[in-house]
Image (tube, rainbow, N blue to C red):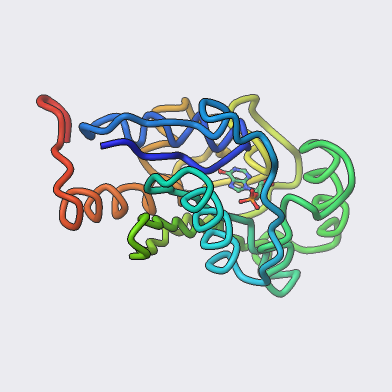
Length: 203
Ligand code: IMP
């Protein structure tokens, strides 16, 4: 079976590919089909945006399409930037996480709770739609630390591990992240609903 991974974000793509690698599917990217236009995320929820992207790419390609929408929810900012995480500030990832650190400069250690959330949407050519969700809890650090990952990873600290998300290897992040949790459930959906087989020697 062919499956289109409906994302242009390189960081997310790098993480999704191994998350789906245990399944007997041929994974295609929009570029492989000449679908280079970004799909505008006009929704106001992760769910809407994930569905907008997956529906658009399924319609354009005629293939099952999988998209995710994700973000960082900061308690001290009443859940912001949330669905607008990619657009929190003009500039690159470092500009955005530095703006976040600045906004939280006076917030004490005990009030810096945050979580990453990921909504994954699978849209089939016959119109069926499936959604899964994953969450990863942490706190916003006072300083960035670590080089791995992307986005807000350098400032997302996980007290029980004593490291930021950007200090984890790609394999470790892919065991515990919000995206990994949504992906594990999506793998179940692909196996259960579409009869996709798991490849030998993989979980
Ligand atoms: P979107 O899902 O393409 O709308 O982008 C979500 C935005 O949330 C990303 O551009 C990042 O800023 C942030 N984000 C989502 N997942 C992660 C992650 O795993 N690490 C760090 N930042 C993330």
